[in-house]
Length: 138
Image (cartoon, rainbow, N blue to C red; front, side):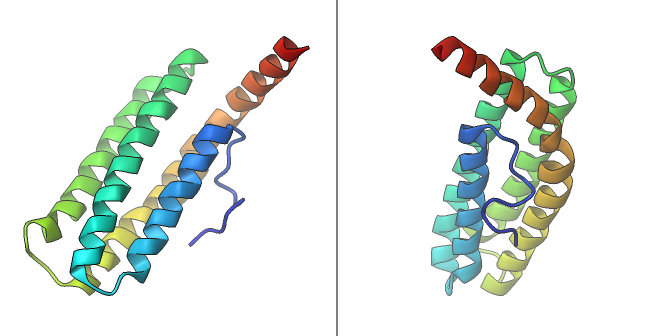
């Protein structure tokens, strides 16, 4: 599990804070001892992920990120996968340990493939936006 300030940061304070929040929620789920607690945390993870993706897509549109359509499709795929995993215990099926392992597998893929490989492409746009904001404050 990555630590705060890890290689997934892109230099956009709000989006980086979202990434930290999602990883923090994932840690809570990993630490859960009961299915009931895991379900509550899973709902928070889904809500945070959906809100983050909306903010990230808004940022990409504002900076005219050329891969917005493809990135949006990746978000949609991730939400569908997360929803499938998160719905299983909400429907009353599966063991706590199996659920935590399924979320871990999905989150590890999301971090290694999406955050590190895909979101890192947003870093130059985030730096550019930060530079423009600094100039505007002068």
